[in-house]
Image (cartoon, rainbow, N blue to C red; front, side, top):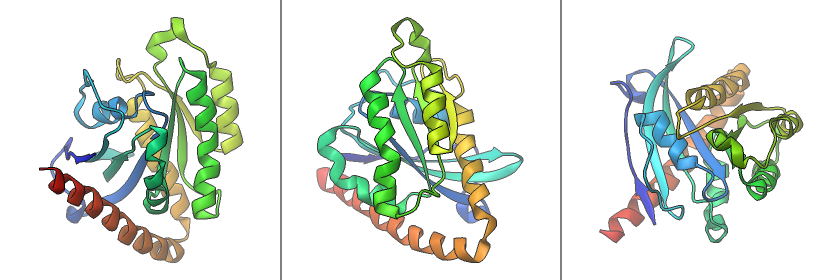
Amino acid sequence: MEVENEASCSPGSASGGSREYKVVMLGSGGVGKSAMTMQFISHQFPDYHDPTIEDAYKTQVRIDNEPAYLDILDTAGQAEFTAMREQYMRGGEGFIICYSVTDRQSFQEAAKFKELIFQVRHTYEIPLVLVGNKIDLEQFRQVSTEEGLSLAQEYNCGFFETSAALRFCIDDAFHGLVREIRKKESMPSLMEKKLKRKDSLWKKLKGSLKKKRENMT
């Protein structure tokens, strides 16, 4: 089931002049992708979230004194929902790859996502950040900070350890991804073509989510 939720941290929209960034949350089920997203857009920690639900969120923020309109897809982490991942990976401009520091298997699965993105996009030059969530559960840690840093260095991407429960470093992770996307925009003419193509794919994907939601009501 797909549910589309929209929230805004501040007034305005992409049509008001803000650059829109298409962000995809990737990671195993239960690592806290939805909790991170909810904390980022509404400063709320959900009591419960069905890991099989794929949600869409929108919010507008300022990053480095520039407005940014984030369109975030929170993907289902369960293995049986991998059929839609190719669509996400084609349409997304940037990716937050998440794992739980309390779950080594989720870290091992996170290590595979960049290769999956490459298989779809045929380039490693994709903006992304790696996030180790749930550091508030330090007593249950199974993945060290050093291991996360090592994987991020292998990915050549930013790395953040976060706590969705405490809202620790959540903004840093999302802002860091937007900064990575901005770095990739050093070739405007090439980026314009890519953005138009991704915008078309993204609209089709969002339309599919909306249609499925309407069929359920």
